Length: 254
View 1 (spheres, rainbow, N blue to C red):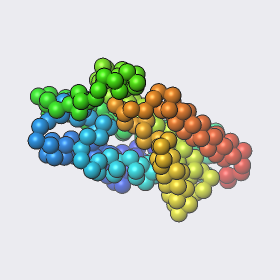
View 2 (cartoon, rainbow, N blue to C red):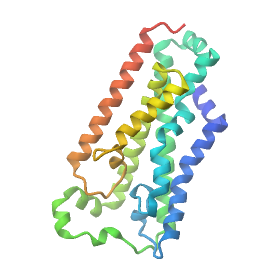
View 3 (cartoon, rainbow, N blue to C red):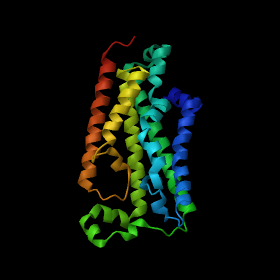
View 4 (cartoon, one colour):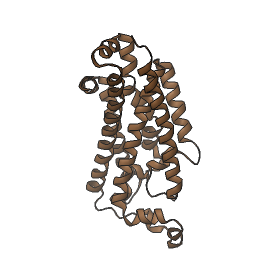
């Protein structure tokens, strides 16, 4: 585990990806204030709310998550396999600990980087836009709020809502990283790993049950709709992770 964190913090490509993940929300806040004459209130300025025109930073951040996670942490197993270092580590740690530590590292690192990026944007939004007055949610009718109790609750507790969605989003990114690492276990080739990871992700972000709905607060979707998407995603990811882990532990590696 310590070796993986050392590699993360000393690898130039990984550090570049971390900087990208941190800077996308910051750039979005700058664009938000540049595009509109009047500043948004802090809770409507947060990155995940998506009030900037064109949503360019959200697209770059969320649509291309697999490639960031692969470069940052998930393809480490492929590198170990090509260098033969996996054999040394398996002999030293054992299969269960070797593969288990990779999965745990993928989650912790991806969750932490995402959470710190989104939380830093949250803090900056309150500092930079503390005098903001524009609030799109103020124009939502009471009739609609009566029909959408989850939206009404979120608007009554905006700060708690933003923090909750930051946590949920970071958790989903962490689980996605574990899933992509699992794909790399079974298909230890960059060509297949990248293709399958993107195919899985784009399958999940398309349609009216897009996983991206869980990343955005203050939407009109019901709790049951969002919960269905969340559980469906977690079940799918869990199946891939468990299948990959059991397969690698039970098959000959050396």
